[in-house]
Image (cartoon, rainbow, N blue to C red; front, side):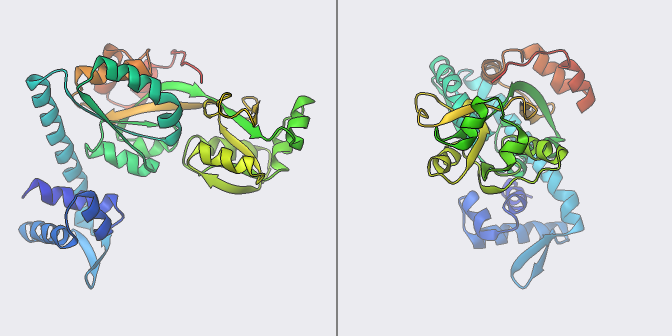
Amino acid sequence: MKLQQLRCIVAMVQNNLNVSETATSLYTSQPGVSKQIRALENELGIELFDRSGRQIVSVTAAGKDIIPIAEKILAGTEDILNIGRQHADPHSGELRLATTHTQARYVLPSIIEAFGEHYPRVNIHLHQGTPAQMATMVETGEVDFVIATEGQHLYDNLVMLPCSRWNRAVVVKPDHALFKLAQLGSLTLEALASFPLITYVFGFTGRSQLDNAFGARDLKPSVVLTATDADVIKTYVRSGLGVGIIARMAYEPELDGDLKALDASHLFDSSVTHIGMRQHRELRPFMYDFIARFAPHLTKERIDQALASPSRNARSQLFEDTELPQY
């Protein structure tokens, strides 16, 4: 049994059983992936995937039992490498983050810049994906941390630490009727629902809070366009397609002066951004430092305490009285 074989079966699941995409993600060929999987199945004496002709169509019952173990083995090998790197050179290495566009674009730049000045020999890699993809990246050791707001149920196997709260803003053109209503103090969910809306794709950047708020009032807004990128949302607001709902941090007065931002904190519950990692994993000193820069209340002691906690409820109790910074 070889690590590359385990990488192949895990990557197949990550890439929705698409051999071509799996080969691309592993920098190898499609025949190479198929050969590695077949070799492992022959060694085990079972099939891990169901096939229709040459096409893999589903994961077998045996595969569902074995692949999660393969994920843990691959993550464990990454821990061994990290410990070795720490002893070889404490001030160099890699920091790999999976995050949303909003965090990467509006929150992380200043943090990464300051971190880079302090650790010039630590390379930082940013990965983006769906919440499900980002969860798998952490579980398999492909990335060190995930920074996420939505899809918390997908991270049940991870230690998720609360970092900050953020609210939303409604963005419109200055001549839009909604801006005139807001000036009269009439920015309501009912008013919003009467206009075409442009907002985030469900599952990204707090979209579910919007759906919950409208649903609680039995309102069915007309969402005419969705995107994972706030800059795309603002572009289509400028084109006159509709009213934008974005994270408040994504409105930049210097760059977005042609749009008006209306506070929507009274319409939608705030969202909490978390940073997540595998439980019991080994963190290098510069990793603790990065987390503290991102969320100052997350000291090494509190992180270690959370990593050692036996359950999500126990971890939640560690932070129940913590006042999170607001964005």
